Amino acid sequence: MSMKWAGRHSVLAVVFATYLVCFMDRMVIASVLPAIVAEFSLDSLQAGMVLSAFFVGYSAMQIPGGILADRYGPRRVIACSLVVWSVCIAGTGLVNSLGMLLVMRLLFGAGEGVFPAAASKSLVLWFPAHELGRANGIKLAATQIGPAIAPPFAAFMILMFGWRGAFMALLLPGLLLLPFVLRYIKEPPASSSSEVVGEPAKIARATAALEVFRSRQLLWCAVVLFLSLSANWTILSWLPTYLIKVHGFTLSKMGIYAAIPALGGTVGYYLGGFISDRYFSGRRVVPISMGLAASAVFTFMAAESATGEMAVAFLTLTLCSLCVALSGLFTLPLLVVPKRLAGTALGVANTAGQCAGLLSPLAVGWLLSSTSDNYQVVLLALVGLLATGAAAAWLIRECDSEPGAFPGRAPNVNS
Image (cartoon, rainbow, N blue to C red; front, side):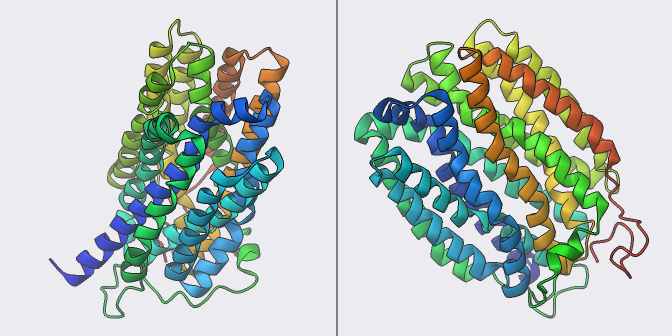
């Protein structure tokens, strides 16, 4: 096994583990939310504010995170992010008012917000373009495994220690990961083969974000990410409450069933990366659009389901199909710009995606308040978003051929 192979897969393993903890920490709130609502006497709109507060900080830090990763390298950014978000998630267990909870969620979101672009930058530095989709798919699978672990973990912790204990216990995983981040997330050796996408991360100008905005293809990626992640975050954030309120699931039963759709998403992310690299390199829009169309159909079937178990089955298929599309959508920003701007590009695209996380809980909270908690209306609204995303995806081209955009860049090469 070559040092280069071992190096890149060690980086991938640490990034995967860090993403898993990141999303587990993030999604515990969905399972804890009913207990928080009861303690603070919140209505549906206030509950939506709690979910959205995280995304205020998270979306605001996407572009700064990308610029920092391009300028200083991913290792420092990931390490700092891990420490900040771990402290903030533990601190969430100490709040005693809605205002304090909102502030802590905002700070927690800001801590996590610089992480995604830095994680993507680390893969761009180590993996060749023809393997980047698969590496990205494996990394993104952790974004579903974390949410799958969160409901049973939260249910157990609430039963044993209360909802505050669930948050405080999450300090430990982040601190345990920190030494591995510092050891393995590093620059590739200068002697690496030219096929490896690597260069010292010392570049990033203050105008990097403005330069990235010159790519209309990247902006279309951002639009489709917004539509796709609006559905993704709505399902992951509201599913535990939906199962308890609409289908009468107990806390322990919810902890099991709410984990299942996220596991479908795990499969979808890996399949999306593999299929795109193997069969659709240069035409990733095909699995993106097909995945979004299929997820719209499955969401409609979930809305029409008579039982909670049937709804969970269809939502599992929804997230599997949706994540096939998202795997391509999170890879394309790394391919339509020069690699020196990869962190900034992912930050720009992900800002739009995470604005979906900010707005969708508020929109869902408003819909539920306006319709006497009619979750079928919410699911049907998601059908419309996903169908629109499937159509909009055809406007993306993997090769950014616009005159003057990124001069000297070869088409379809992560140059």
